Length: 307
Image (cartoon, rainbow, N blue to C red; front, side, top):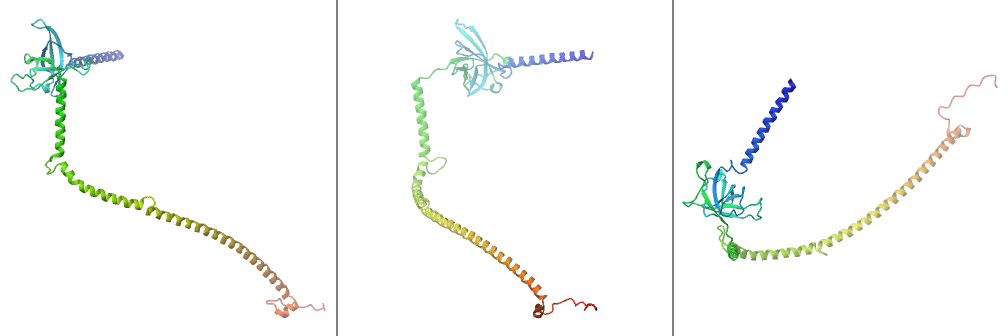
């Protein structure tokens, strides 16, 4: 019974999660065309769709203010093809006032990923329109026009004029005082040139002195050569001194060995002399010459009857 209740509980939870996920997916799908985020609308009419489609951008002042939500084909009063276009406008841009004509600009690469866009211009004229919510009444309808290509020569001339103005502005920045300065950049440069020339001369003098000191065969090279020669001589003296000390050590070792030999021989001689002197002192002549030996034992009495 308990296991069955657990299974039913899991099934109910899965159903709830499935319904919630489906509801969220539906809401997201609905808002993909700006149903919520772009609650205000503007309508357009045109005899030529000009590459527009759902999700085409609605632009104004360089900002994307909305997207095309729906395109409905129909037949106009004159029997010609007509397209009714509904575009959503983001709530942030809903208070803006627009000119009653929209300009269609083709994408750089016309495709489903880069469709044409609608460009609106801000206007303060009495006939300017604003986007409204569908429930607030009939949304305003604007006429769409295709962007007119400019004449190539005129475009080139405009570019030349802009370039000339930019060059003139740049030249003025150098020839006229800027940012409250009393002198222009060119005047400051003209005044700075003499001092710069003098500085260059000083630099050349310093460079020459450096060459004399540091350059090839300069004073520093001569000093280094002398130091190297002195070091070589010092190394030679050190080698000679090492040899001399080594010879002295050898001679001292030899002399010390000889002295040790003489001392050993002297010690032996003195030992022999001492031994002989002790033997000589025990004789009659030795006692006559040397005298009675100290601590000599007293003569033992001769027993009577032995004579």
